[in-house]
Image (cartoon, rainbow, N blue to C red; front, side):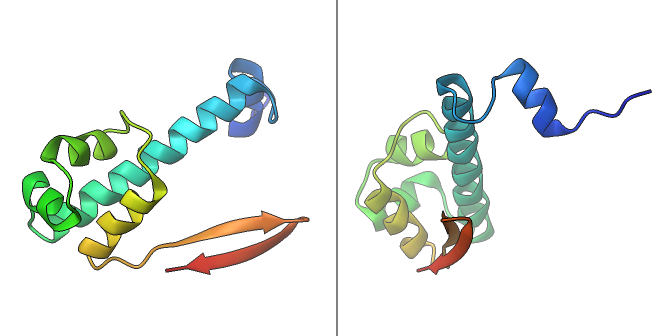
Length: 104
């Protein structure tokens, strides 16, 4: 029995890295993970979407859309959401095959 890696499965069914279909898939996945992180942080703070929206200055529906990955929210809005939750944000930027950590 041959073992197939997850990346090989993605290459076969979604497309190889660099293709439009694969890039869109990975972008949606990142947005979904970001929305889930916001939802988990909000719930850990025992806040409703409405309460978080008031702190950020957006409607409850905008928080719901971000959490459910049904909108391309502005990066500044997402950072304001994490600030309101008092959550530290960090991510990795890769430049010339070197990873750089970025934190806020």
